Image (tube, rainbow, N blue to C red):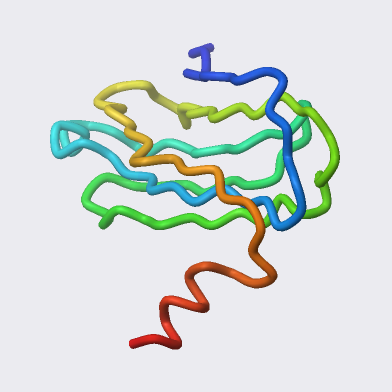
Length: 114
């Protein structure tokens, strides 16, 4: 079978109020025969987020609450898993940002300001 694409950071120190905000999407070239991909985020091999994105879908913003890992040094891994076929799977992570020190979702706070 096809292998996943992955990037990992080791020794990531997560403090109080930690979270990850990122965008997930497929390049326009993915239209040609792609059956989509699964975007995954893992902390120390534990799956903390998974979403399937199909060709033609808009970019998806993702916010992952990592507060339960506060005080730990972890391996943070971004993974793209193919589905049945890897044809046309041009998957992209957009601007992954690790945030610290929030008591609630940055997206909730942003929405309230609008």
